[in-house]
Picture 1 (spheres, chains in turn green, purple):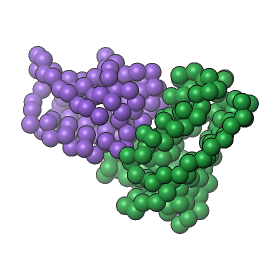
Picture 2 (cartoon, chains in turn blue, green):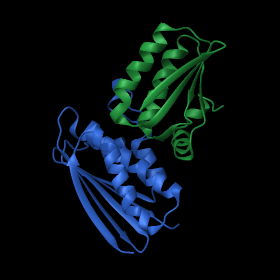
Picture 3 (cartoon, chains in turn blue, green):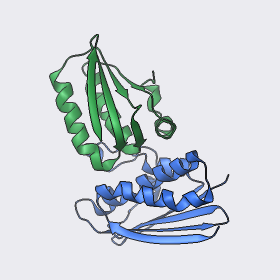
Picture 4 (cartoon, chains in turn purple, red):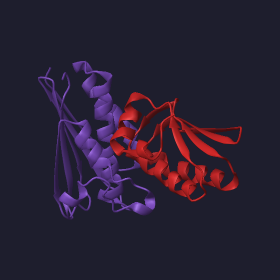
Length: 139
Length: 101
């Protein structure tokens, strides 16, 4: 099945559950296993948390999610318009966090990398970050 | 997110129910710490049977409690995580210091 969607919402923690539920519901018609749905939900949760905690911090703004399914290949872009990541290499390291006092584990990107088939991070300092992930829904 | 607690034979069991993500972390941490500060027990167990979802926020939260309790020589354990949560826990490597029972 070929399908696409996009939705935009306020970057607040209360919307994390909304984001992962919407993306999971988008994938369901392709009949993925529960494990695959859970991998996607967890990765969306991590990406959206990053936008809220790091992209916007004490400010707020919008998060845009664009998703597409083409021949069982699911791809999703999680976009924020916040402060951006200065050093993406460093941010991708396991346990790297800039927010230790808030007990962030530094495992967000590690989980996205492990749970999805691919992960790409693009950032413009001062303008925002786009995280692109893909996963085969019928692997 | 609901938290219930039970003390039996000097062991504290913390039952987590619902979804553990960034939206509940601050309050959850404060509630658990407030409780832990007021009691003295031999072991602490996080029971996840009724926890339906957890992301890396939960890893930070459990690690934080581990550090606090380690200073008081109180070991902590995890029990009954579902498949999704177990995968997050395994990827984090947390089982090396906090065993699943």
